[in-house]
Image (cartoon, rainbow over all chains, first blue to last red; front, side, top):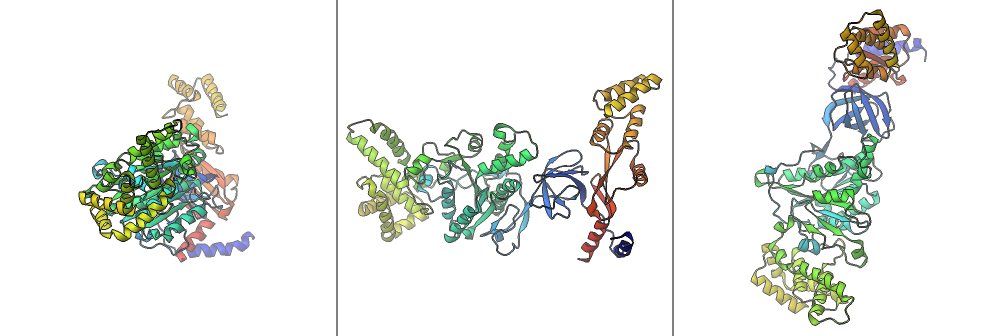
Length: 499
Length: 137
């Protein structure tokens, strides 16, 4: 186009602009100097703040400031856009990263920025809250005192979790970590607990499967899924758990109870390592940056049980960490173990022996959940841990002994039955009365006469008949949650009759 | 490169005996990589000379070390002629405290835009069209 032919156009443009009211420029601007691997360097923008969101003009993309210097800083592009390049202007309105939260999120699958990814309609009536926020302070908290029933006998009986607790689920790949978390979500049906499942760096097919399971079981009615798949940029995977925490906090601050599952923090740490290396942060142990502990501590500290003056809500966190060859002394596992209030350790060996959930009760622990355990569960599971410990010890010795005395044989049988009772099918959480009924039967020796091979079937039949024949006892257990003498008598009667 | 040019200028000044002892001391501090707050006569002259030369990151670092610098980035659709460029530089350069950096950005279509200290003055054709579109929509 020649200069002469351009002149009329430019003249018309200037004439048209005269009618545009002059508006004071409110946003600050800088220049994108470089763009490499999703990281942009912005200059000419002094006073940038960490966590600020800048807009890249003409690229339809935002970037999160993760390093600042005198003249600008480094920012990680949030939306993968091929149009981001050097020479573009970067604008800042001084806003920080937020996510829209609200009841409208329930039953939806969203990305870490709160945008729906489930193909359904757009979200309405949400309020923007910062993705990163400061954890409730000491005075705003109350001790963990209410149980969070997982529906998994082994956990509710031996490693109880309380509302507001942070309990780590740790184990090798394919040991059932997600299943434990998923069962816990499924068991919250009708218990007034809002759940958030955060999928970090997972395959999309797997997350779809999880969402489908939740939907099939009616759990999506009280669950939000935050999805940052393996195919998403590392920064999105880095942000996902904070977004999940922000959603959970929304419910907690409304005085409700919330449960957030972070699946999993190993991949989260890897994503953060990727971002940090691109930002040229000095690599430390296993190439993780120096603040990888703070990465998880500031996230998990957001789980809390609020005091009654602050609404009494709670946010329970179930972070998942994957180990390599059962090594819990690796960098990220030890970090998260030290941050959380206990851990549920899942073992490959148990899993392949058919003990599922493959919980190693010996090294699993709940540091604060005991105070939150219901009275009836505490009493019903009284000797289960001891029975198991004695069983495992004796089982090891009995391999070498040719003859065993009657007491030892009895202990071995009792231990075997307790192990059988703790086995549970995936996605079949048990109600409180069912857990009490099977624990009572096992620890009081009612299953000792049942052959080991028939134990699982016998328990299933026992529970089915129990439900049909003892509805008043079930009601008493579920309502009072107390192991009174009368309940003990009724349980004994039920076991004697049915087993 | 800046260090050797500066050293040559310093040697010349010492030979001519135009520097005071405190100026020599300050000049040597800069030569050793140290930072100064208020540039002396020799340094001020050298900074002004550098500010008039084409931008380089080494220049910016040197000016930052020797009393601070503010960078004005000008984006233009096409390379301006030498006269225009000199005129632009003269508008901004004061006491060698401002450095003008020119970037060519063909997508501006015409005109230019200026970035300085978090502000953007957009006089590009693209900016004008965008403002108009935003107003109309």
